[in-house]
Image (cartoon, rainbow, N blue to C red; front, side):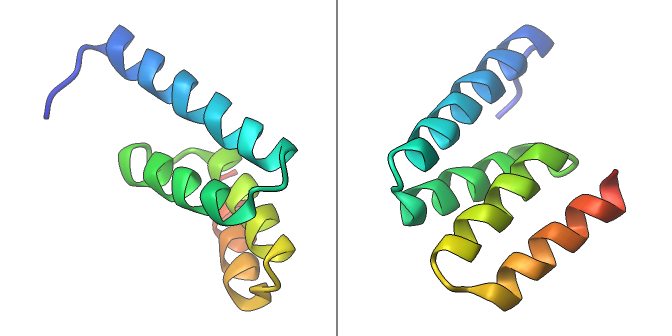
Amino acid sequence: MTYRTDERAGLKHQATKEAIDLAMESQWQEAVEVNRQIIERFPNDVDAYNRLGRALTELGQFAEAKEAYQHALKLN
């Protein structure tokens, strides 16, 4: 699916807000899923990798969290 630049920005903003809201509500598994969707569409989104790392940490999935954080560092 092809989006215009402003549509992509809007979709990213909406998904980011959803991911943050889920984290604020401690809905960590859902936050993982949304952040992975963001990363699928925007593979260079450092913030999404950081949020993913946090959510995975909260779920006790430390090896996966470490990978997410390392990827964020590599991108940054």
